[in-house]
Image (cartoon, rainbow, N blue to C red):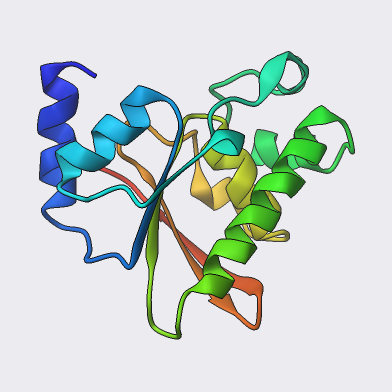
Length: 156
């Protein structure tokens, strides 16, 4: 992470939180992003660190959310990986009391696959292109199911 990344993370972090849990991938830049945002990391998860060559061949980053959603429907490597992410996110949401929230920091491609698998049937076209640095989504869960998602963009 360079100085401009730290500056961006600080600005974004000033407008977020608090969070009951902060989870990142195991890659240093995800951990560093959380710290630069001003949050203590509770857990690092290998699953969110990389998705491998099979997924990259099916849907190379960056793609639109719609492209990731289409890849998830193909039942290949991207679909299998996205399903694992959605399952992890559901488990994480289930650990939180009502009205509580978690911050998850991962990477391009991982974010889009996890979102499209967690909230099937969304209007992915309206979500636009892949998330950029410090962008993401807010997922809303009820009864172990994602019921809404809001894409969060950074004004540049």
